[in-house]
Image 1 (cartoon, rainbow, N blue to C red):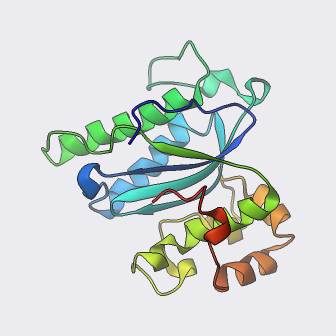
Image 2 (cartoon, rainbow, N blue to C red):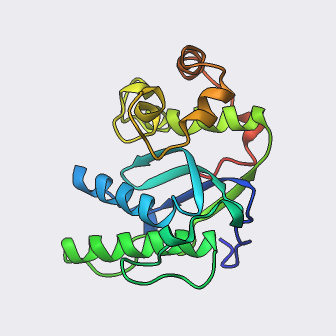
Length: 204
């Protein structure tokens, strides 16, 4: 794995992925998933629109849009609860997300050593066709790994937020506009999908 990663660019879409060091678990109980989502909101929502996500026992996938500087509300951008960053850098924010979560898990479970692989993976995604395929891929991940028979039944993904009418930090409108409506989105996810044409943006 390359230690040097290309920084995330503003105005671009990405498939973001990270997993446990040596493929170990990073989520151990339900409150871990909830805590991670809280940290995702704290560190990532100010600099990115989160379009789709899924959390599994030893890894996570995110589909995000990195905001332009003019779209960022700097008063909401923080490295921690008390420190305001000097640089608007989405790559640093993802690093802070993983570090903050790892420190909390190590403290709670009295563990030491790296929780995540050193660097999160990122793949640029361009075009509506690939957006759709990636959204299907992310929501189908729990089925692929045998956690559920149906992607809409898995609790730790963005599926529920997309079809819900409750307020959400997720960019629900982007997804529903992409699929034209909620019914088409549901039908698309229920169909099987060939990922050969998006193998360059899949990171597993």
